[in-house]
Image (cartoon, rainbow, N blue to C red):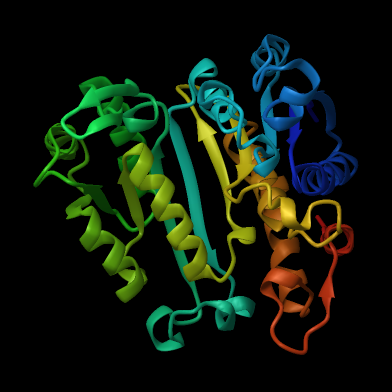
Length: 359
């Protein structure tokens, strides 16, 4: 039995709806397995701007640092489009990752057999299953580089700088190699080494690390080729490691291969077990408050939290199996429903998953 303190950032748009269902799943896990989950709700993103004038208040950072893990819904929306760049809701994500030392983002992309028809990729290409892990560097690269405006050859120009240190590359590389060791011992490193100096250093360090993992076969791909191969033959890719921006793009591409971005969870980790857990999708303000959002990605993120931060494998598997059983039983939200199928709402899907949770 364990007592776990969780910082909860429900965020904007559909965030409060999907996080509420995830919290209910954790409460049932607690009842089933004898754990206690204490939730401390915090503000970040647009909701924080409205309440405090800041996208990431100091109180939120302090609460997250004092917690055992962080649950995050989604942030942002057109309501805050005119907020200055350094205070936009999305900057809260970068601030959290930086302040909490979360440099490694794990994004599994799995096709459930029951949803194979939802993928836009031909069945003969993906088969009846697909399991890809994207390991994305999270606190370096162009998102954290120097930026600004200046006068250039053609007038005012904006710039964003991509830079990576050996330390940043080495630590994410180790994470990826360890992940590859636990899978099929095949790692694809994605870069743009034919053009970018930062990618040349990336490739150099990833290659050097291979000596420490002789069982892993490492393959280097330019980003445009990797994007093509992910669609052409996704089963050839097991673990991808790549930079912050490339990883952001690849995760969305992978989500569409699996059928819906509403199905993909993620874990943001640092040196220890502490982590932040969130779905990879956005705040979807167009359906916010309408009981239409798919809560599965957030619920599966709770399974990742139980596994990676708390080492609770049975509890994590309980959630994952419940999701599989619900899908196998034919229950769908609107984003994964086929023509003619009745779609469940956010609350109803959460209820079905909790019903299927058994030890």
